[in-house]
Image (cartoon, rainbow, N blue to C red; front, top):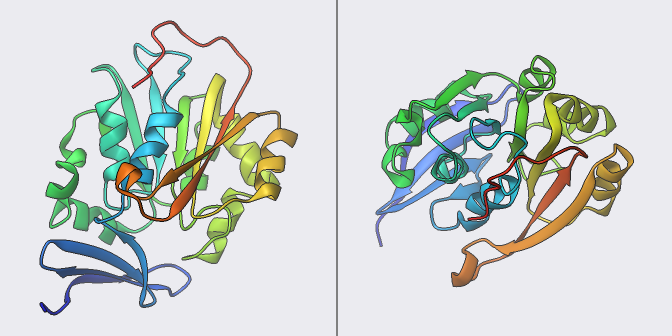
Length: 233
């Protein structure tokens, strides 16, 4: 069996150690030695974009925020479903993750960072939300393992009452907040409803039709007129 090769390492602000590893054609990002994401299971990350972009207030020239770059699969699925005039901000906390996507991870999702519609903002996705009030047609969050933070403790602030209110303020009327999670979270679902979102919850397999564990996608939609030409792929 081929040995694992470490391609890169970095440290999050809370001292979590992340490592990009490869064995043959398999790539895994580890957080303190535990698997955080793999190119073998990314169907639910793509589904985050599929569900999150189904109804957009301005479908001809939408502005979308992808929170968390990961291995680029959510960004690729987002770009594949948006028109030429779209604008996609990618908020990524760790510069090394961007470098990995510009390097060895790039081919896995067909180099989404090379798309002219995509622009990376380095830093906390919460800061991006706070400085873009009423801007986004959709906000797609895949940070840590969802509402129960896994990698960095302060990411939990994205999902508490204040974090949900910040995301809501960053959306246009009729906009959608889509959140990827490794598991169900009834309290977070209730939190979205309390904030004024119409909520649906989707359960998808990590490899979609090929199986894998179930992951959860929370969808919160704000009231408001949805534009014509709703994306339905």
